[in-house]
Image 1 (cartoon, helix red, strand yellow):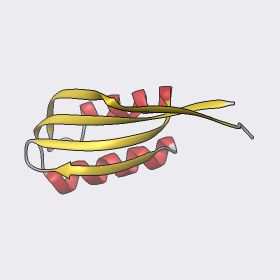
Image 2 (cartoon, helix red, strand yellow):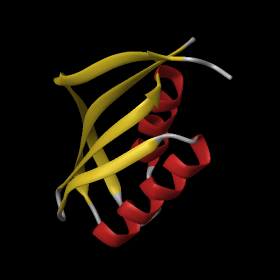
Image 3 (cartoon, one colour):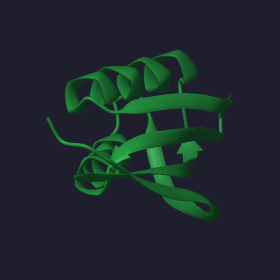
Length: 90
C-alpha cells in the first residue's frame, strides 16, 4: 500500500504568475502528483498538492527554487488542509 496525502502549500515572494504556475504544473506532471492552483497573484501562489509524501516534498523544493523570473521568499504548509489515505500499490 502507498500512503498519499493532500497538502496546501502557500509560496510567498515575487512572481510572474504565468511563469510560476506553468513551472509548478510541469513539476507536478514530472513527479506524477496532482497540483491544483487555488490562488495566484504577484506575491502569493497557493497550491493543493496530492501524492506520496516524498514526491510532495520534492515538488515543494523544486517550486521553492522556482523559475528564474520568480523569487520565492517563503513556503508554508497549512496543517489543517492535510489528509492521508492508503491506496493499493499495483
